[in-house]
Length: 280
Image 1: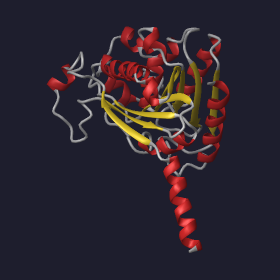
Image 2 (image 1 turned 90 degrees about the vertical axis):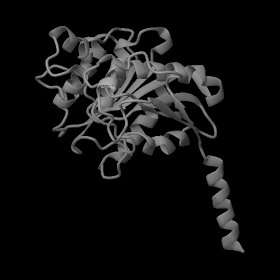
Image 3 (image 1 turned 90 degrees about the horizontal axis):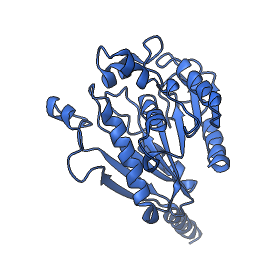
C-alpha cells in the first residue's frame, strides 16, 4: 500500500507539471513568397513548405515566452536537441516555449525572416490564451537558427515583430566569407551574393541602440562557426549600449544544444535561467 501511495503521488506531481501543446501553421494561406517552394524538389524533411509553430504552455505561465529557431545551416533543421527537446526545461520555469519550423531559403533570403516575424505576431496575438505578456516575447536560435534569431533582432520590420530579448547558442552572425559558416551563407544568399546583400545579413553591422538585449553562449573550440561571430556581435551590442551577456565554455565544439554530451550543460542552464529571471 505504501508503494502504491508513493506511485500515486508521483503521478499527481507529473500531472501537475504537465504541459499543454498547441500546433499551428504560421499562415492561413500560402506564405507571401513561395518562389523557393515552386522551384525546388520537396525534401524528405519537408522544411521547404508549411511553416508552423509548436507551442508548449506551462501549467503556471509566468508571462515570458521564447520562440526557438533550430539550426541546420539553412539546409535542414535540428528540431530535437535544438528544438522540442528543451520544452520541458523551459516549462518548469514557467516560460511558454515555442518551436519554429521555418521555411528553408534556398537562396531566397527574405523567407526565414518573414516566418520569424509571423511567429512573433502569432505569439502576441494569442498571448492571453497562452499566458504570455506581449512585452516579454523573446527569440532564440542555435547556429544558423542563431543567425535567424539575430536577423530578427536587427531587421524587425515594426514594433509588432520586434522581440524583447534574444538568446543565441553558438550563432552564425556574419556573412563575411572570412569568418562565416559557408553552407549557411550559400543557402541563405546564393553562391555569389552582392557586397550589399552580404553586409545586410552580417548582423554585427546592423546593431542599433534599439536592438534587444542578448544572452550569447558558445564553445571556445568551435571549429564549425568561428567564435568571432559571437564576439563581434557582442562588441557591437556593447558599442550601441545594448545590455548583453556572453558565456564562452572551454570546450564542446559546435551543435550541442540540449544534448547531455555537452560537459557544461548544467552551467549554461543555470546561467541562462538566472539571466531570464533577472533581466526579463
